[in-house]
Image (cartoon, rainbow, N blue to C red; front, side, top):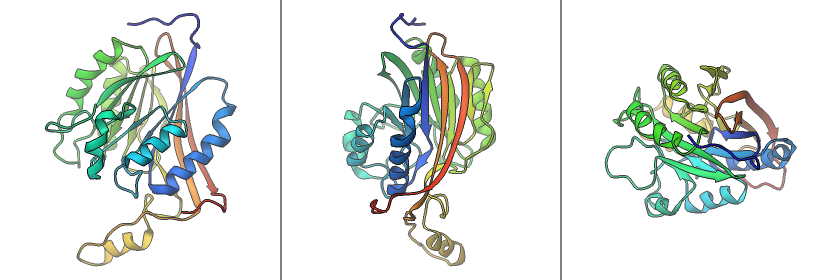
Amino acid sequence: MTTTNSLMPRFVDILFFGDMVGKPGREAIYHYLDKFVDQQDTPTIVIGNVENCTHGFGISEKHYHELLNKGFHAVTGGNHSFDRKETADYISSAHCMVRPANLPGNVPGQGARIIEAFGIKIGILNILGQSYMANYNSPLESMEDYIPQLLAETPVVFVDIHAESTAEKNVLALIAAEMGVSAMVGTHTHVQTADERLLAGRCGFITDVGFNGSRNSVIGMESYSSMARMKQLGYVKLEVASLPLVQVNAVRFTIEVSSGCCTGVQRIHEVFELPAHVKL
């Protein structure tokens, strides 16, 4: 395990934003970052789940770079990571993007990587759940493959488990904590859970971080098309809800750099109106 030098901060915060849905989700996060992040005493690593970032499905190369320019250090994905054809073309050069590690087949990009900020190395792993999801490879096997590799480089390791089942996320988090992970978040359901806690005395965890986007929506999507899907047969296209009342769902983990132990977990839920000049 690597050690830190005297010039490194003792603690680092990992600020993770749940699934960001379209432009309302991006703009809500940018507003939050401008208002709140500079108030923190410790350096802040900003990460977010981007599988719904561009019009609700996947993330474009333009929006990937936009997020980096707004202060993101890394982004993670999920079952919609490759919904946009262009993603396969640029993901190999997207050095701050971590796509799910347990996708079947020969998939471009990386499912685990080391990023560095403020002189601190952070190991990041992204995995997909299997329960009520598609035919993905074992998330447990991906954890067993990648977590030891990341811990060999840094004691600070972060995992995003993108899954439907709360039980699956919970049991994988318990295993991750025993393996030495610093923090783990659940994503995908878009509904924030009020169960943030420490596992094994060292791993910060929340079952689902929630979503960022229009507040009065169906998990970020426009409500009328969602209701139409419920009422009628046939395909109804879902559209991102573009309403100025937005919510920010995130979680902040405070982690001791030398040990990788999480010492604090803060769940974030903010609701506010976007400024009038923001066009959705």
